[in-house]
Every structure is written in structure tokens, then in C-alpha cells.
Length: 189
Image (cartoon, rainbow, N blue to C red; front, top):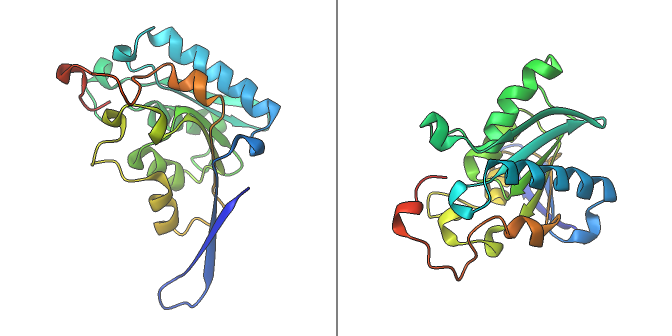
């Protein structure tokens, strides 16, 4: 069941809606296939949570525009998250930075930075696997606000977020909430 929130835009009196579907009933078989591809891509980066195996795929009309993994350590760049790298790669392939109509698949719920990049790129839909409650808190420290806060505050009434796609498989890639994670592994992922 979709949760719908309405909020009036300051001064305009208009109502804007965003949709967040966090139950697997909204996930299609095609979504599961794309997510399984993202999981395989994440696993290609490494087989342990210490490898930060996060992957993102951007698809439009059944065609892959970009497939990327988290590259923060490789580039020594805190912004080189899988979703950001995929958005950067998708524009030139698509021939436009406007990704309206595209779906971004991510093995982990996007952080605020990645959500804002999706909003600026006009991605139409985000489907993610593991959510905040499925993984260790290090993935969503205080610096990470909830994805929905960004969508609501950006007045994106056409962005659909759907979580829980292959959630267990995705969560198995990462440290679990109860895991005792070494402090040296708790950096900016």
C-alpha cells in the first residue's frame, strides 16, 4: 500500500504529493531481475561488507544507461557513491542529463546526497533493496537524513521510491544492525 503525504507549497497554496512504497507488493518481476543484476554487480566489487559492495543501475525503457559500484576508496572521493557514479555515466549514454522516465536500482537505500542527485537528474523512480533498518547504522549515520525528507522538501511530486526489492539478498551484502563493526571500517561509504 502506498503512503501518500500532502504538503502545501509556501505562498502558492498548491498541494504536492510524493509517493513512497516500502512494501514488496509494488515490486514487479522485472524490478527483481534488475535488482538481481545489481546484486551481482555489487558482489563483483567484493565479497565482504568491508568492501562496501554497493551497486546502482539506471534503466530506461528496458535499456541499461549505466551500471556502477561504490568507488569512494578507489577515487578517494566521498561523493563517488554508486548512485552518483551511475548518474554521471547515464547522462552521456542517454544524450541528456534529464533522466525523466528512468528507474534507478540501488542495492542500498540511497543516502541524502544520492537522493538529491536523483532529484536534480529528474530520475522518475528509485527502487532499492536493503533499507535503513536492515543494515548497520554506520551506513546511515547522523549525516544521512531519511531519503523521504529530501523528496518531500524538493517538492518532487512525481518521484516514486520503492524499497524492499530483494531486501534480504541486498542486506546480506552489508553489516547487519547487530554486527560489531571495527571502527576503522566505519568511514564514509
